[in-house]
Image 1: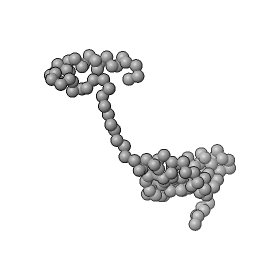
Image 2: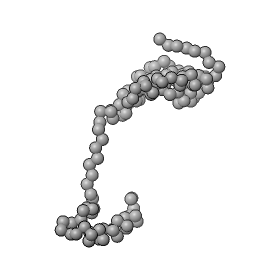
Image 3: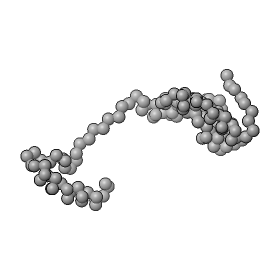
Length: 127
């Protein structure tokens, strides 16, 4: 079912479209494609179709799909849809100098040796 409401102008149409807690899907029509895209960019919905009910976005498996507001969080399709099944993890190793220093060397001595090196790093390219 689709509800259609008469409005006076584009500004009122956008205001009415955004006057909801929901924001799953919307469709807009404009006098030109450029006008439709400009209107669509201002509508608060996870998916906005221009000059079509739902097919362009629904049929695009590379485009992220999902709602805004209480219409849901997260996305399906596209890279964003795959990310929800992942969990980020950082694995790091030192490439040059270990901050703990060589075994057996007192930390105070290592800190005095390391400080000039760390200061000189600001001059290295690619920092």
